[in-house]
Length: 217
Image (cartoon, rainbow, N blue to C red):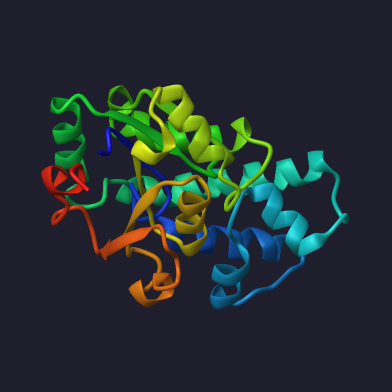
């Protein structure tokens, strides 16, 4: 029986991935790397430092990568603020989880300032007993460290946690953590998840998710 809910943030709690992709495209162009939006989608996943090492190797020091990352995230927050809202049905789900006494947490590759931007602007921090960000882990997804840390902080065994994710990498992370997963298809098509054993089903948003059905299996 599932007693813990773990949410990825970007693309899962808020439909913001295209804003991130466009911010990456603009920032990378500023440092001399012109990519199409499709190339950005394919290459810009994981922590920001992972992304910059993937794209540039050892061209930049960690401090220089961190500065590029910080500037990109500031641009993202500026662009996204007018449209910031939870994915449809999520507020109801959080209320239901709280009423049922479920432990809920966030496990994300986002930087802390982006997590604060979402949870504090939307006033939802009190729903979560654990929030693990990119700065709290040494290994990015699909390594299970992020979800295992959330489960540990919530005091829930991994096999009793249900993960909500939007990407194949995130779904593989849930599998590697020994957790089942429901995919929100804001960013990827459902057929991209057919080979990932952790995925129970794919849904466009949370309006069809009923905890009384999800918690018994």
